[in-house]
Image (cartoon, rainbow, N blue to C red; front, side, top):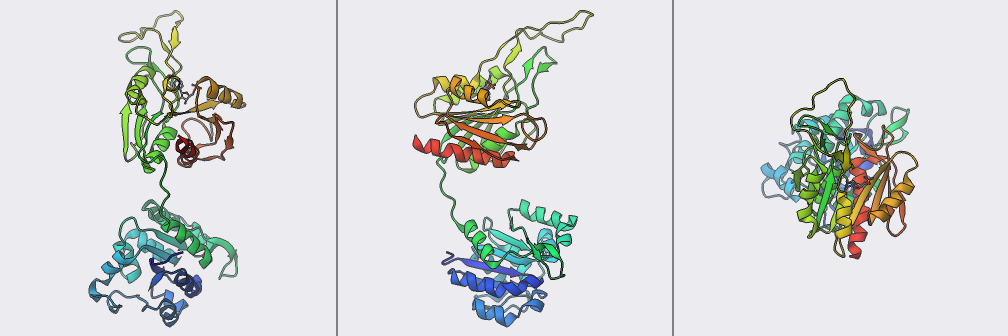
Length: 408
Ligand code: C5P
């Protein structure tokens, strides 16, 4: 329900505007108060009188002729409305209105109130236009600009279009728009991660051969950073211990940069005692050169042998020495057919959960932006996730960890 919610409904000039009186009716029926902001072209498709009657408020279009609408000061009504609104729905959104919103123009009440809306209030945009227009680089660019600003875009639906053609471009039905709006206005459930302390390791390690060379791997750190970002968003205090990567520190995350596995262990160790959760997403080198050479190793005609010794296992060090109630989660990157190794790792390292991913060099594993994880729980639960962006995969992993934390 939308009881007590104040909704700004922006309507721009597309044929789908004929559905908006029904949208207003449904919003009102759900308990919302609705202020319609229609562009001049919108009123070519739907009557002002109809919209005013169903919303119970005058329709606002032009900045200078808009009447007081019950507000104290008509000249600053756009500001009052920006404060008043709990959400802004723009349906249908034409290519022209999209472009004006993306550019920050404000030459009518719809675009003006888009700028005065208070930060953090949801904006739901339902584009509706011909499919080719929708796919055009300009429209797609404007959509990405608005999405990057935090606006939620509802994909147009496929079906018969006003042009007589069939394809993508229809405005979603008012019922779907209302359902989406309700989701956006629902307060997010409090995460069990809120206030918890966690360590995330990320990226590769570098193991020195001499002062100018090292052994390492292709890890980009993207998975670990995505996990740290997601957990911080849910309210966790995150210590992110990372090998050398080229990534921005996610907001609210404490980042510690290290090079070698030994340094990673020493940087993470001070947090062991007081953390609730350790996620080992780093691709820690298993071996390091026994004695790194000072300066630069000189070449000669002979073959060279380098003796490697084992590195400490950071995750296992934590997992086997942890106190009751602390959770340990690891990754297992294997080439095809490695799920049994992953299961073995779960047992040997005494983990609560292992995220198994197949390295295929293309879509999953190192460097790429996507990952297909299979989550193996200590309780025998197996969850196979599809190929997802690393951000989404991180969210799913944290979703799976939350109930484990709650049980503690
Ligand atoms: O044994 P393997 O390297 O496959 O285990 C992978 C998991 O263990 C990852 O979670 C990784 O971060 C962690 N690990 C570690 N220290 C090591 C090796 C692996 O923390 N030396």
